[in-house]
Every structure is written in structure tokens, then in C-alpha cells.
Length: 343
Ligand SMILES: *Cc1c(COP(=O)(O)O)cnc(C)c1O
Picture 1 (spheres, rainbow, N blue to C red):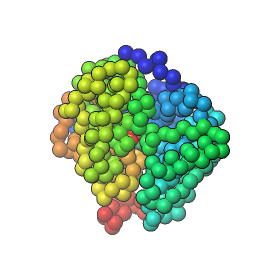
Picture 2: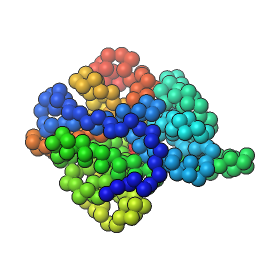
Picture 3: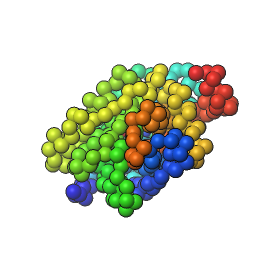
Picture 4: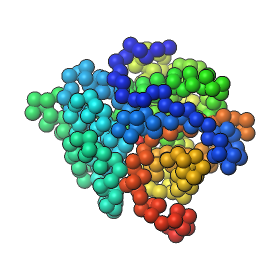
């Protein structure tokens, strides 16, 4: 199977490393844990969106676009990676920012991703929280057209079928690396939000007839239809490249809803433990919004004995570290003391 006929702009440092987490595996006393470092995709501090943007930005260029437009919250990793991709491709970038956290502190408003958006030269359109993204994106696109430009709108999280191809590709890359390392993964765990990552992984694993169980950990909200969206997008992704949508089966789509806590971007004890544990045992930085909660899900599954001791379990690090600096207040005192005092 090959995706080489689909236009793709090279933006990532590939392949990203595949590493064993020996110290963490020993501490947790469960299966052998591995990590795929998609936080190291390179462009603009990296992350999972760059893989998707390789296809979407190539499509934008093919359509003669002059400006990429997308949307997200103030600390959106997706917005930051889109701004970086635009800078690299010589396109303008406009970000429609949903300012939804009214009680956010100074670091959240000025540091991390939003600081990098500015450095990459993005035009910021900050709207009050709750403004529907669709209407705001359409408005921004119309203004570009009226000024004689060509807008290219990228959906939230770059989670269109074309974007999800980035994770079909990542699955092929992983398959080669696993083969070279002589390992077969029994389970794969990752953070799932706008679901392009999970959809691409599901489509890729279906195409390879892989037996690896893919676990998405919902970081968006307990009542968000993450599972339904991942399933639908996986089917659309397969159709886009000429394969039967039915290759992905209902039972393949697994989403865990037990790590969201109070809501998107809100800290949980499990997230704090996961971020601290990975820092101290592996010198790997997780983020408070996505990968911290996804790793908390993996740790919970180890403790619930959901894996066998002989299993190989892979965590996909989807990036997000810049937001650590926006959430600095979480670690401004001794972490353990914070957990006891505030949670
Ligand atoms: C966007 C993002 C995710 C979720 O990926 P989706 O494809 O939107 O489901 C996970 N982790 C990080 C760090 C992200 O920025």
C-alpha cells in the first residue's frame, strides 16, 4: 500500500524516534512500554498536527491559496503548528481564537502557543468564548476573498480525511520501525480530541490487517461524540484513498472517557502524576491538556491489569509541550503539595 500519489509537502522530521520506556515499565511493574516521539516532528516545536498539515498545506498550495485560516483556543497546538507551516510555505496565516477560559492567568494569555503564533507571524482574530467556529471561519474567508486573496480553511485540529492521511502514513512508518526493532505492539494508546489522529491510525491499522488494539483517550469532554467522530472519519479516510470504508469495524473503535475530569484543559490528579512521572523517570515532557491525560489513561489501564505482563504497549506522544509554559502555575510550588492542596 502506498500514499505516494497524493501531494504532500515535506514539513516533518521523519521518522520520529521509537523508544523503550525501561524505567517507567519497571516502576509501573506491568507490560513493556514504548513511546513513538511525535512530539519530535520538528516544525515549530513539533506535534501531531504537522503530519496532517503536510497533506493539507500541499492541497492549499495546489488550490492557489494565499492564506491559511483555522481556529482553536488560545493555547491551541494545532493553531501554532498551522502558523509554523504557513510561515514555512510562504503563506499568510489567520487564526480564529476562541477565548473561552475567562479566568485564565497571564501566562495562559501570553506564553506557550500564543507567544509562538505571534513569532510565526500569524494574524490573530480573538473572539469571545463560545463563538461558533464555523461562522467565524467563513467570515474570515469572505474577508480574504473580498480583498482579492484566496483563503484555504483548515478544520479544527486539521481533522479532515486529507489530514488524517498523516496518521495513515505514521502507521506505515511505525510498522517499519516495529519490524526493525523486532517487536509487535499489542496495544497503542494516544490522546484523542478532534480525532484525525485516531481516524488515521485506525485506517492505517485496518489497511495493514494489524492486530494492535488502538485506544484513544478522550481529552475533549465526557459528552463529546469522540468515538462516533473517530469512526466516521476513519471510514471517510479509507474512502478517500479508494479502499472500502467497511475495513474499519465498529469494535475496532475504542475511546476511553475516564480521564477528562472537570473538562477540556482542566487539570486532574492523574494528569499531574503522569506529567511528573514521565519527567522524573524518562526526561520526557508531556503536556497538561492532551498527553498528560492520555498517559494517565495508560497508567490506569496498567494498574487495572488490563494488559498482560508479556504485552508490548505503545504510547504515541502527540506533542503539546509549549502549553506547559502556559500552565506554569500548576508547578509553581512543590507538585505533591499542590496535588494535596488543590485537588
Ligand atoms: C491536537 C492534539 C491531540 C489530539 O489529536 P486529534 O487528532 O485532534 O484527536 C493530542 N495531543 C496533542 C498534544 C494535540 O495537540
